[in-house]
Amino acid sequence: MFPAWNPAQPEITDLLVQHDPGTLQRLPVRKQQLVEVFARFRNRKALRAVLALPEKAGILDDREIDALLLTVHWEMQRLAEEFFHGHRVWELLRSVVTSIRQAGIRETLRIVDVGCGIGYTTRWLAAKISLADHNIEVVGMDFNSILIAEANRLAAAESLPCHFLHGDAFSGEHSSHILLSTGVIHHFRGGALLEFLRRHEQRETQAFLHFDFQPWLLAPLGSSFFHQLRMRTAIARHDGVLSAARAHDGRTLTEAARASVPGFATGIYGSKIWGTPLPRVFHTLVGLRPGLVPGLRRDLGRHAARLGELR
Amino acid sequence: MTLLFLYLLALLDGLLCGLRTSMGRCPLIRKRAYYLRALVRGIVAAQVVSALALAALLLAGAFSSHRDALRADLASAAGRMLRIFLPYAALVLFNLALRLLPSTDIRSATSVFMLGPLTAIRPVVMIVGILYGLSASRLLETWLLGLFVLALMLFLEFALNRRAARAQAIQIRALV
Image 1 (spheres, chains in turn green, brown):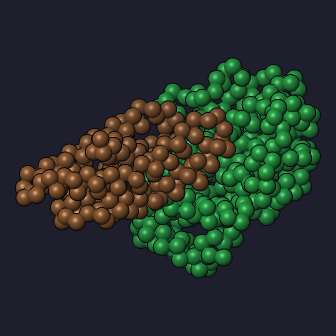
Image 2 (tube, chains in turn red, blue):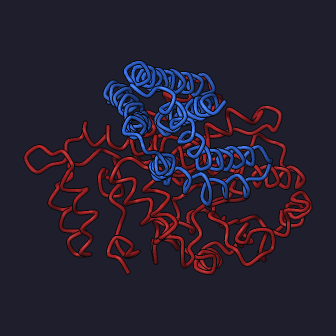
Image 3 (cartoon, chains in turn red, cyan):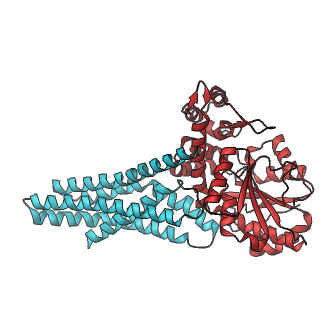
């Protein structure tokens, strides 16, 4: 295995910005600390990217890092666009919303995009779907304040009916009927994955949908080729490929979900293409209150075959 | 006719280069106007490239002592280039057309399996197309003109990309 594909290591962007978990205050990040992390994994590709990061007296330069993060996230949105991710999310989300309505819940459904970054999915939904017709509200949340500021700026620039909040989506202040995320869940590993899922068990929460890359033999290779072509920054190229290598398989996700949130029926949606053994690029960890499952299967129609066992 | 085809292909290439170099640099959702501007930039750049190529062609013709032989040689080389460029362009257009189908699987697959690799091999196709066109030519002027056109084609995307990168950097600087 190439060192840059070692799933045990973090992605560079995971380490660039650090916050105090209590106050959400940004903390200074020592460049040497990042160098040591990737030196441990002998990941020369990451080391090259880290060494090129702008610093002041050994501390990463916040302003430059913010500029870099925005550049990377603008680039990453291109991938979501090329993969028609908004359509993919809505295809499933629409049926989940319908199943919740069929169960008799009439209030405005609050959908929270966890770890939304610059909020592509949320903004896409707000731009393309009549939220009022479906009586839904979409909100994006992230720990990174610069990305949240950018998401709010972009939503305002297009007068989109959505907003973004800096903070913890699972804190008591923020309730949600549906939680969704894209490319987030592989950042949680082992005990942290169990803990992340355990926090979904909230009274109001009816469903969760976590979209992520699906790992398979050729995924890192394909991802490497694709990112080399499409991405322009060294960090986006590195992290994009590592994401594909770190992605959890369906079994890991469902086992973790079933152990952590027994109050939900959980399973994987969309792992294979058209009933063939070919894997899709993305798969989705789906969790639903058990009473919603028949409604979801009914509403998915011919796409119900994409839904694995939910239990 | 051959020249017209080459011109149309240059136009298509410029248009797609304009589009490609602007992708990933605008995070809005509704960006038809942004992409239209990118397309126009690509078309304008292709016009500049085509005009320079035409000027070189006319100059070569004007100063050549064997004008008729040069014209025949150029026509033959251009015809051979089309044998490479036309199938490539057809493949690109076919895959772009597939993205109109309302299936996220098909649309994603065109990106991963076709448009990505086709973008990757663009410089190779340019080089192979021009060299294949020139391979049967005996005149130095034809070779020089062919290589000049190749340099222009390769420079086109580089220049558009630099311009787009500069514009993006200015925008991001204003945000942080």
